[in-house]
Amino acid sequence: MRIDHYGPQSLPEPESRPAASSASNASSSSSGAGSAEDQAQFSGAHVQVAALAAQANQLPEVRQERVQPLRQLVNSGRYALDPEKIAGAIVGHLVSGSAA
Image (cartoon, rainbow, N blue to C red; front, side, top):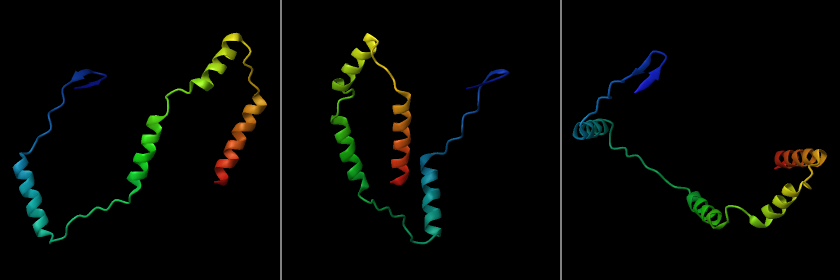
């Protein structure tokens, strides 16, 4: 269903082909193209990604030991921001990021 300025309108359903006819079309087109087969090779990076994901899943979602002292400062009204420190940290991060 599509909703536009004129109100809801039903869209026509896409035509579907039977699985057998599409499979026969694919086999006939591949036989006409020769005997070349598609190949895929994996680099092994997926193993590193899986290991990093496992490490990340073991970390707590919120680091309470860092959050609790900040929460107390904010609640007591003693948390003060220093704009110069913030700007310096941002610039330092940008400089170190561009050098890497």
